[in-house]
Image (cartoon, rainbow, N blue to C red; front, side, top):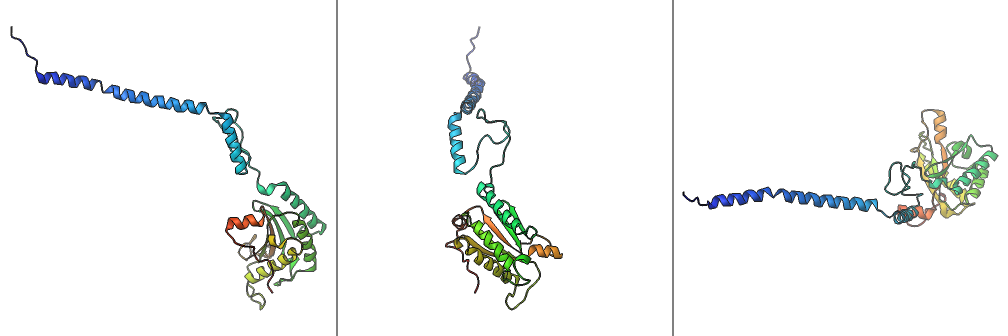
Length: 264
């Protein structure tokens, strides 16, 4: 009976087939490693130290002047006891007790002078805005303050002196062109009116808190196509900002203090 000799090539093919059959172990081991890493991460998230996390959140909230940075949004949370709460709006700076009390005092002064129809006081994100109609303050096309306006602005200045906030004095006009020798344009008229109001307020409060501004006809609050709209647009606004003047200048990069003296 003849003896069959092993073919070296056949032996090599068998080794190759066995090696190919074990390649799936490499893929399997990679998958197991990834699953292990996943479960380690999930465990780490599930075992977060809520006390340390809450301490960090409180520190951040204090730094950013917010009520809270966690637990205010609806939905689940990984911190126990901090989920499912309804989101609440943060307390806005203009709703501080100081400015709220300021609004009350200003409104009392306006009511006492029976000028509710000519003076409007509003509270918004920028601060407290006191809008005074130009008909109350000045004769038509002029910047000379009326006696009634002087009395009212003196009271307002005394009230504003009780808070440290910066105050913008803004002169606004309607869109009707003006070409007088004294005021060649609405820019000059709005600036002169703002300057005279600023000068009067500076006699009752710190001048370094005042910012003088003229917007001319470019900040209307009503349409200029009606008489009532033009009357509403002719005004001087006193905007009590939510911060002191130093903070405003720091944010805007302004050096020094704005000039508050009126034109000669």
